[in-house]
Image (tube, rainbow, N blue to C red):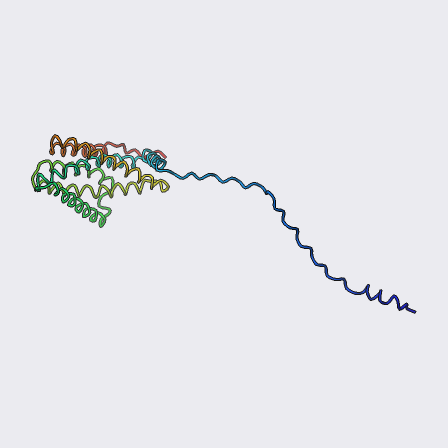
Length: 241
């Protein structure tokens, strides 16, 4: 006979166990973890660094060195021409202010020459333009030294034909020969050298003008011939890899 007192105990033993609630995860320990690796410091480049990088690249790459040397010397002759323009306007056109008209005519002719070359880009190689343009500028300066409206008009046309394509040619050579990471530094350095040459030429012409206007123009023509000589005599041996 079953003990009635033990029935509740058996029922309790057959009852399902209550579900266990999982313990919450341990709270993270906030403490000094491993030190992160130090990042390499980034040093911003300065104008001096960019100029030095440009100088090194120009000196290392032969076509860039040649184009930079030729155009820097040629810009010195152009600076001499600009210094002479007011006196040319006074002597030939009746006033120093007419020199600005001469510069405008040169600029228009240069623009027209570049437009023609843009329509026929294979007509002349940049190296050919680099060699011929100083000779044309020398001829223009010699014509301006002769005096008279007709020689001066011919000088303006020749100067524009030479100056516009020369600038385009040196840009083409720089773009072609410059390494992509240094292209900005090379263009900046080349422009600074050309501006320096222009300023030196203008200063020398200012001294020569106290002596003679034709003498200053012929001296500028000699500077352009020097640029042409440098272009022809520059070694064309390919760069070492």
